Amino acid sequence: MRNLIKKIAFPFLNTWYQQKTNRINYYANYGIRLKIYPGVFHPGIFLSTNIFIHFLNQFQFKNKKVLELGAGNGMISFFLAQKGADVTATDINHMALRGLRENSQSNALPITVVESDLFEAISPNAFDTIIINPPYYPKAPQSEKDYAFYCGDDFQYFKQLFGQLSQQWKGNNSIYMILSQDCDTQQITNISESVSISLNLVYKTKKRGEKNYIYKLCIGQN
Image 1 (cartoon, rainbow, N blue to C red):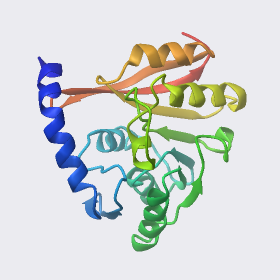
Image 2: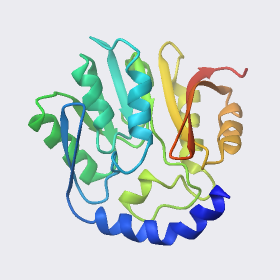
Image 3: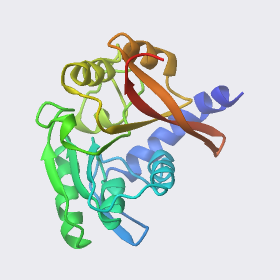
Image 4: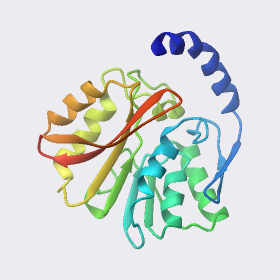
């Protein structure tokens, strides 16, 4: 039933979302105010950002080196910087990168901003914790903003992500990734396990009728 409702409602919701995010938006939470440029993932519209922050809030991050891979709006990065972490935020969307730099200054929360396609310009071993809120809809992205939602028609994002990790990652830190029930978790798991990386479920929740799952990545299969 949920899938049927989503299928019927999607054209209307998509039109509304495109209109809303086709201009600069502002969003405030946790004492952080963001300027969100057109085409950048909006943390107030989707659930994953705030679910991830709720999960991460249980850990101590003071003086820890943290990477948010594909940071988008950067709310998670700024929240962790607020908790005392030494944060690096990456993205390939130039509007996202612009927003990350400007919001870092306006909130007086210093972070390092790096343009990188996954781990091409940065090592996964340089951090204590890595945070990943990935795109997971199987469709080829047509523009920079599409990379926040679409992982490629053959899940190329995950093949590249896990492929790079299998070649570079030593497994001496913590990597967390959030996924929704709306994605093909089995296919994503199959891709990770094909290069001997396991996804271990560490948190799950249901909000607005949608289940979300946070996984800790580990070297080697279960």
